[in-house]
Length: 179
Image 1 (cartoon, rainbow, N blue to C red):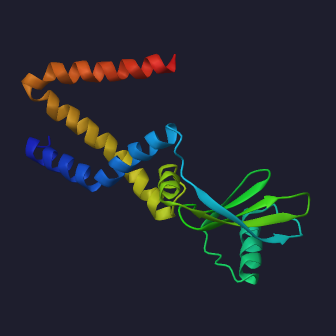
Image 2 (image 1 turned 30 degrees about the vertical axis):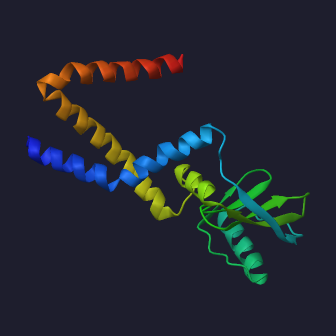
């Protein structure tokens, strides 16, 4: 079994390492829920008059060719498409979006998000691949940190009732909200 001292050190290192994300996630989430979703500048830069390929790899080549042909930076990681839009991600920085104007015409926009919009896009998992890996590690570390914190609190006899009651109330609030 892991000693209490080692568990405390693991708990502290994980909590400190992921603290910036632990603060950013509820901050941006609360602002988003309060209606502050950030702003972005959307500028039409050119139009394309040819059909977009169906295949994802061909779509990437298609948009890179058109962007580079107009002297634009085509440094995107992947495209998120809907029936009418093609969004070049990550969207946590200046990026491009193509919107269908009609059957064969696309309008290509340059999107410039402000800081809050960039942070919310990170929160949603729309950042660079490395950040998405970091956020996944954060999720796992948050579970481990929370469980180790609960266990550490449970091992201190005066904290047991407070820990148990608080945990039970938290579970009950979630269950009530699901009904």
